[in-house]
Image 1 (cartoon, rainbow, N blue to C red):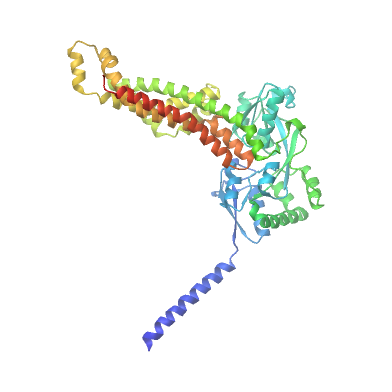
Image 2: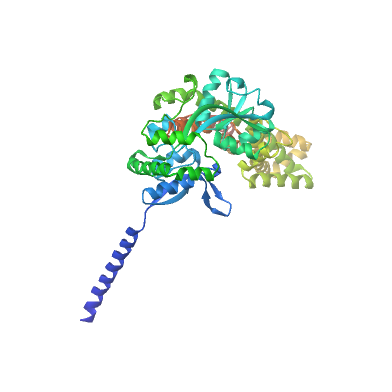
Length: 503
């Protein structure tokens, strides 16, 4: 009898444990996963100096406020700023906050909350130019920096057509102002929150008081989570009434007289436009996705030309330098071989992104290369290391007997290299050279960190403004294929011709 009771008792105990576990989990508050980018820094989201594993900032506190309002616990997820909308749409996160701007396109594509902070787009210039450059019209023909994929960038694109301004796109909000100080750009157009923060940390910057436009920060949910967005809105309205939002913004030193008027309108149920204060011909587009695509195609084509030109010039430099390095490692004296080997290992052993940063930003105090030139130099120096290894192995692959025979015939070492060894090595190196060129074509996307708007960067800006990666991604892939496939086909034909037996 005991043997029959024990299995039943075990099943009963297991069922009790499962039931208790489910009851415990059900009693725990669920999470509100929110996406943010700590690289944007304070006062939005930044790593806590006392505990880098945690984040702080007013968007962190607003995320916690909304989570408490919907009965959940906030959990931070690191997502690059340009991908926050897509991450929320995919369901990786429930909500996105990180100084996200209120735009017509975002309202159409996402379930946005009510605005919780009003900001102004302002122009920052060097102190010496404060009386010279006050408005966008004053900056005709000048270089104006901003963040890519923002309201400010689209304003500058429109101002380019009207005033001839040259927009300069950055991936962060630090280097636009540092480049302004050293003279690489003539002005910066960004949110007053960012402008005032940089003015306090960098000397020599004036923030012009006149606003170019007025917009707001919002949180974004996917449209299928509209009910969760509505609950978050109630939490925000409650925080506006009881002063919680004011306390948060005062804590981060960003509270100003714009906020009470905004809150009064929202609590009164009045509609708030996503963007105001701009002339019609500088406004942010509210067109359909297909119309926006038609408008962006010329920009993508121009960016593709930049990508191709950049890649061709960089590869030319890499090939020339790679041949010299390979020749030096094969024929040079021991000290030269050691130095060239060290160069190759340094360039192959460090990230190309770091090398680009050092060339453009790190050396700015000594030499201020234009962004396009710095991009060419950086890619050429990096790929030269890889090319040199291809050529060195190709040179060493030539049979020793051929070389000895050439020397026996009285050829000098230079003639052996140029007439016997070099041509055969070039044939052996052709296929890997082609692979490297295609790889460089794609690696050219990294130069966007130097403010070069190549194909991938322009696609990223397009996707951010459109609110979707589907159409921009497909167009970008088609353009890359259109550039790389003919190159690969030409290399294959040349290789077949060289390998064809003589008739």
